[in-house]
Amino acid sequence: MYTTHDNPGLVKVLQFLKSHKLEYLSGEDLSEVLKISRVAVWKHIKKIQTLGYKIESKQNLGYRLTGATELMLPWEITEGLRTKHLGKKAYYFDSIESTQNFAVALSKKSDEVGSIVIARSQTAGRGRLGRVWVSPKGGIWLSVVLHPTLDVAKITLVPLASAVALSNAVYRLLNIKTELKWPNDVTLDGKKVAGMVVDATVESSRLESLVLGVGINFKVNPTEIEKKIKTQHSYGVETLLKKDSKTRPAELVQAFLEELEKTLNTLVRDGPIPVISQWTKKSSTIGKKVIINSHDEKISGKALRLDNDGSLIVRSGPGEVKITSGDVGY
Image (cartoon, rainbow, N blue to C red; front, side):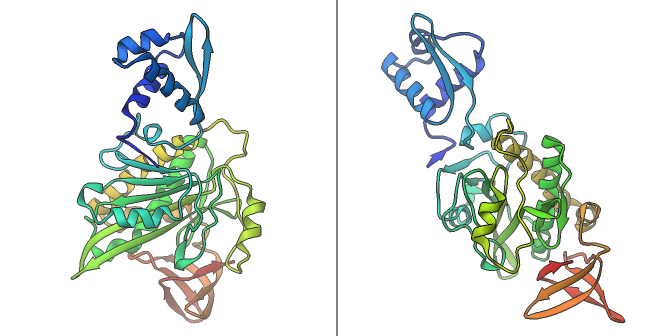
């Protein structure tokens, strides 16, 4: 595990190399400027290389950073991040059972508000309704500890707001237009590229903690994931980018956290209408004929709109039905 405030010596060496990309820096120079021994410099350089950074070394010249890492290391997320609260503290795991479980435990501490937990892979990732979330390397598996300033009644809107934020981030960074499928999916070409899950603790009608889990198929092999899913609820898996794309996952994490903070602030300040409006504009559900599996019953009809609590309103027969949870098929 790596956290934001760990490895200060390594991060100092790395930042210095980043700020001098066009020139070689000798071990002696690094030692003098950073006030550490040359042996410590050498050890940090070796460690930085094991983390996926490319460093060129030339005798009598020194070291030069020539390539960034693909890993979503804490300092790669926090450096240049334009948020007030979210993502200022990060925990990174090469592999973990579940980022969501770890973040839920963190949420019990008041000083962890805004913290994120991120993993390269999960061995027991979980999605909505307790389903398994297949989480191989190449994806972005992320949980965010949110500040419980929301009214309890608005908890159901958090996945919708988060889906809007991710869709905005994907378009902003990658110029890719995604669609939103009720209740909590982000889709590309009709297939899932991301999903959301929320864990909330409520005591005496007061929101004690709120943790958002996000799974993004960033650079994955959709076929391999589909083989492992084997469920009737799957409607196909898509990847945002191909393996050879130069965009790093940390860039999308940063864009998402910035958009998420903005969207959640709108929800707290202005209520559900602006978020529901944004969601509806991006929706692949509204206006479609749908079949919904909800609580062991099937409801078919036309998806009309979202209610103010995020429920789906469907015209079924002569009347309207309010759906609070379920799986949508077309």
